[in-house]
Length: 329
Image 1: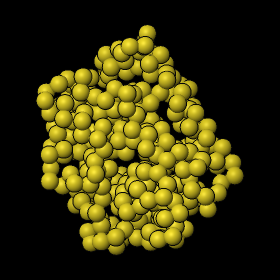
Image 2: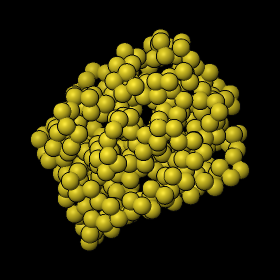
Image 3: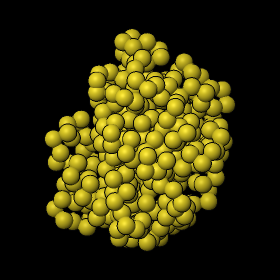
Image 4: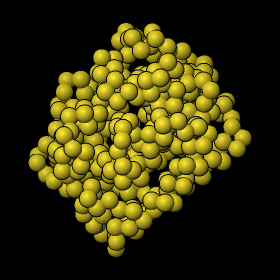
């Protein structure tokens, strides 16, 4: 089924569909594209945003790593992020949180000093899907990887927890979890991980004014994620395919809302992956990130065959997406 490829291409296709609608109001989107959203990614190639570019950076570091531990991955992610930041292709309105933090990384600052400590923007988890695709990784290491790649730029505990949940959602779907079982599984993970701080991966990140223990620091992130998952489950009790998903689970500019609204778009159309992508693009918030996460979830669940072959053939970075997907298929 090529589920890793399905997730990578789904993420990029959602990104391309959401690119033209990201900064439009809901009424403007529906007036221009209709209630179903853009019919297909525009252009040949169909251009993506920084969401896909940074996802490729995360994936390339994972594939280059001789060991999947913090000491190995941190410098690799640092280099990949710095190379992306100065690339001429980094011309897609990248997030300022990422750019500021990467600027400090480029100055040689330790990542704990470089990160935007108070930020929980969706840049933390829009790029984390590859962590969910790496096979045969213990859960604690997958969690550490997901949280560290987020923490290089976004140091808020909710950014870490939301990235963890996003990676595990991709991982579980790829392994065959039924889509509608996903919200409860994620809610249980919030409860199980609430006091777990991965010191081998995060070091002294937790030490900041007002924090007393690493466990209390990370618990704030899990609690905020649990709250947004409550809203997701409430929305799924009486699913409404016609309303803006952002009304139920937020506009996606912050990490936990990007996770929940991407999941909502996927689960509203769990039987129609293409419609899930289009729904993600018809959102009042961070449409490209929402649609890209919906695409990662749907592709992990249903594989590469979920996506029209014409779309796959003309998406920007198709060769890179194919290389990365095949490495983990």
